[in-house]
Length: 260
Image (tube, rainbow, N blue to C red):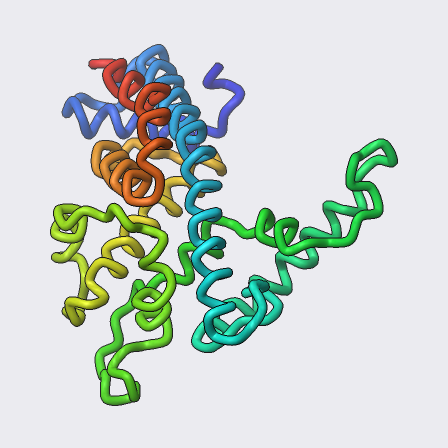
């Protein structure tokens, strides 16, 4: 199988075994490299399965909260095409991209499709939003000078306080504690949870992208990412968490890691 892969790709797995065992590269057999490669593929597949449940749940929760919030500001529920401040600047590009993607998807519908020639709806556009689109709405980079903001909070911080936080009613304090050390500079307590969610989502987004592009995930802290994902799912939809844990293949595959 290794002959079908690039030498650079194979070498990275061989060197991973070298780093783990302290052996020389020449002493690492192709069979060992192949077993590590196939194991990682199984873990990646399990992650893809888990994230395929997590991502739509996240997108739906954020969509629901932003529809309510946008209407409360005197706008329509269409937070992509009719966004209130401070959402307007954050969604202008993604709104355009989502519309183009939805229109392209609609054009590909066959004549026997139940929505053939149907107009594009907000749901159509929401379904085109990527993990990165959604995670970009959260405060990740803390401002260093708060005197620039009349409220003392940045646009994304205000969005968290007044809208996005409603999507995570069950967010645990221990989850925030686990991520507090990664928030620099320190932020007001009102938005600490928003930065904790943003940090976790960014790590999951990076993992998702690596899995989608078949990139190496040997150095990922899988237990931390699982803990983050489960904490967020519990905060959004406890019922979904039960289903995800029952079907979890990530943990099972991690236990099957080959030993050298």
